[in-house]
Amino acid sequence: MALRSSRGAGIAAVVASSALFAGMAALVKLLSAEYDGIFVSLGRFVVGALIASTTIVIRREGFAIRDPKDVVWRGIYGSIGMILYFMSIELSGAGRGSVFNTTYPLFSILLGALFFGERMNRRSKAGAFVCFAGVALIFWDSSSPSLLGDALGLLSGLVAGVSIQYMKKARANNSSEIVYLAVCLSGIIACIWTAPRALSLDLRSGLVLVASAVLGYGGQISLTWAVKFMPASEAGIISFLKIPLAIALGLLLGEGLSLRFVAGTLVVIVGLAVAELSLDKRAPAP
Image 1: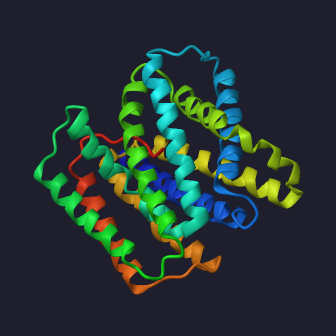
Image 2: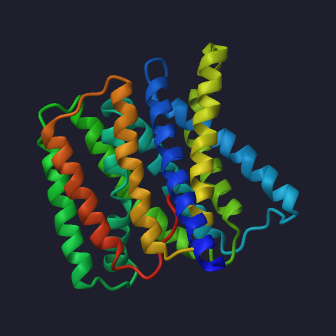
């Protein structure tokens, strides 16, 4: 009974994580009417750094970093991936940006095989083929508001795939809060030049900005917690729920939806699910 209860809690946590990430994407799109994706990224990094630092202090873990090279590279790639994702949402919408960004597990598998000595089995290769077929369908969708936004979204998935490889190494001897803090600090350095835009924030926009950052952090923590109670590959598949949720919220914000985009999204999800089933372990989302 306890095992079933723990599994149920894990599934609930993954579903909650998907909802939180989808909500974050919708709020980022809402802010994009007034603020660009780079400034919104800065908001998430600042809030994330404050939450991570507070957690480290409360737990008395200390800020010492072991294997700093891996932590630094995780921070650089993780922050770049997030910035590109937010820019994609700004240009193409919450739904399209989320679909392309969620291809990161596939890129992690491919990059792991090419540069990190990991093996790809037949299921991984089949998943990659199906996933890229779905991506091609979406790119050929004439209803896209921005091809540049689509390209940035796919690039964010690629960069996040690299980031995950360094996350695996960085997490071996460092807490998740330290590794996440590295991402936030790297992002703050990259986006600090947009800080003066904060002077134009009104109360509503400021609250939405903070809420988007909190939702993103909550989604990260929920997914990390969930994999303690269920197979990581299964948690990864369930986490794809964020795609239809982000699309649904995007519709509420007035984003378009074409048949080819829906078909391509379904094909991408199938390809990602096949690829996820080939993994023994999976790192949490960036």
